[in-house]
Image: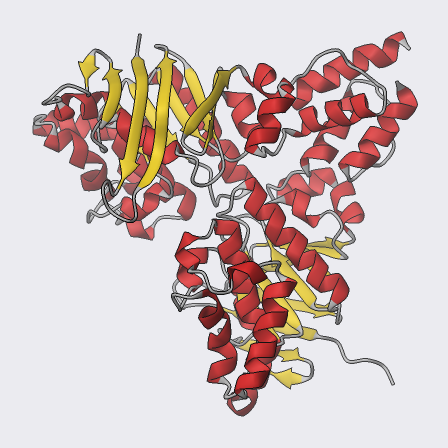
Length: 284
Length: 277
């Protein structure tokens, strides 16, 4: 089992007038090799949750074990967990800092204590994994790159640590449609080549139901459900409580049902809905 | 008498520096008062640069821009231009100047030296227009992204602009925040006849606009009613743009031999499907 979370609770600014409960009794198991999506409106606790997974926030209450490392014990081995879990934050390009792309991507491996030539190799490989070439851009300043390239370099910096678990907080935010597609393809690819377990936060329901094996739905600090995309979006009760936007396919299915046309199942992917309808039309 | 166009962009060329070349290349565009125009294009196409030229934040190196007849190059009248063109940017957190919502909205009119009573009336009106009147005495940093953007819009409205330019104002919001902002802007366009120029990456936000303008490589490469622009799929894809999700779904159905008429909105697609099923 890759990540086990049991009854996790977290409160910001404890014992002050600003006290805010951000996670409430959350239990969740994330399997090895799984692609988990996390959705929920702003302030639902998504970011607080992922900051627990690599120990950026200490475990206050409950239990969390990541790849066998207990983060709820007295003295958790944070160093070990951060090698296993790579986090790509929102707008990661704002975190680029070094003089050259090569140095920036090499920062993590260097801190892990790798040797000079190992670092070089890691940097080359990592840039290649995100579709960039070290010979072309390695000596450039990261700030001279285009927006899409910067984001790729930032992701390369995270996967240079070869994390088993890759966590991404809205990796497509602010990109144009093509840029979005490229980053999503990249994430799919990284799951195959580098980090088998992926956890991704997204506000785009079409995008997340396309990518994820299961989706965790957060609402006001609670985990409302963790289900496959098709199961989740067929649960009208959950969707209504969380005030979720629906994937286009689901929304069309519901509207058809309201008009008396019941397709008998809920699918999230547009292509699957198109298949479903095409079969029905041919029968008619 | 013929009414004057809201904005006339005439052969505008602009570059930030010599090294990177011209970001806008002989762009001409005329926007009428009350129009709702969406501007789309890939990152780096020049959309935001174009937006910043409209209220004189950037002045063209060649060509001219007139806002209700006033040239943005004239320094003596630049405040007339800025009063008429309100801009809302991407990041809501970067646009708040005060710690109380009503103070934030009042910031613009206070700087214009507008009398106190008038400012109060404008705050009332602006907050009501964006549906945020109950937050008047609250603090902006406790609001959601969508609410903050609506406050930013109210702050701009308090200057009584005739044109609203939204430079990817929905890009950082969650789905609900985006819907709130879009509903607010559509309402302002309809009820107050405010001209809207909306720059976005979300194709679905273009449905229902009066015009879609596609920018690529610093030039206007396509424009027309949304249905015209979206009917040219292959041309759109050369600019790395796709269709709104509903239209993409309709296309998938057509590929599978389902005969769907032209649809742009979800309800239209459902209507078509009900006819078939």
